[in-house]
Image (cartoon, rainbow, N blue to C red):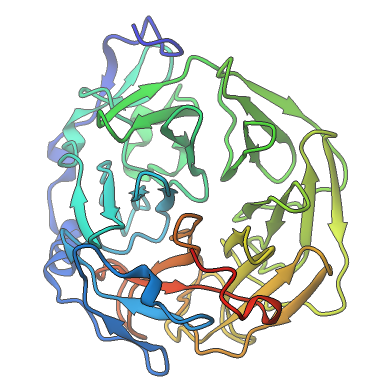
Length: 402
């Protein structure tokens, strides 16, 4: 038995009926997977062809560049999450749709090799007929993997563990309501080298956003009310009720390595308020600024340690934040040392609403972002990758390059 896993979860107590899952609801998904990669939105810098290895040093500063990726390019899943092992040169993608009308229940892990920009799939999705609930309420497949379900912003690579952590929130698997009775949230760890999942024995919170804090070496989660901290030593969650934090859901978090605080932005109502959590002191506070960016739901935020700034890609003012078919967006930067937001004067890739497909690549010093490429395209279109190397004016001499 792997440490931190359930000893008693060796057999299913509930299974899904295959007969109820056939039909036309997956036809649109199959058509989307076969679709060709869409053209880049107007105004964003032209694509670079993938190289072996790709020349990251050739990226211009302060310009969004569309990247040409090859291989098994994944489709856009609205509720999927993305993380990165920068030192391992790999970007990881997990999560799928599980709403009644857009369900695909895909529990596979996709990865992008950052040296060659080639996508691959770690294993085929488990058939939905293998979805079970264990005696202790864990939702898993007969292969010992988590269900394909919403991941939100609760997907993080944890360097001390050399694993990807995923907090599973079961209520969104609407097609499988009978199996959900008695189910509970779970925290899973995925080893990208062994391509193997394990479920933690700890009682898991229902969080929609998590972030790794490298200074305290803990995973931090938040549900709009309570704050949770997972020790990378004990692999146990601790819960705290703290005043002063954001409320609601569809929140996003990033770790500010300069202030040494977790930053949170956005919510289901397209909030534009920035909050900071001091993990060591367990204190939340609101950060007041003179300027405010557009509000966002499931905000595309990352923290650039070299630029000492939180980067935000958000729908432009007047564009619906949760879901839209326009895509018009703006890029903003919150500078930790000066405590101010700045709107960046550069053409930005499309943002069709909530988007958890974003990471900061420390090794290459780039903001990596994925979205379907063209206004009006349906969810399920192939993912397109963009990269931004942000260099503030004071670093324009190239100090911030890798």
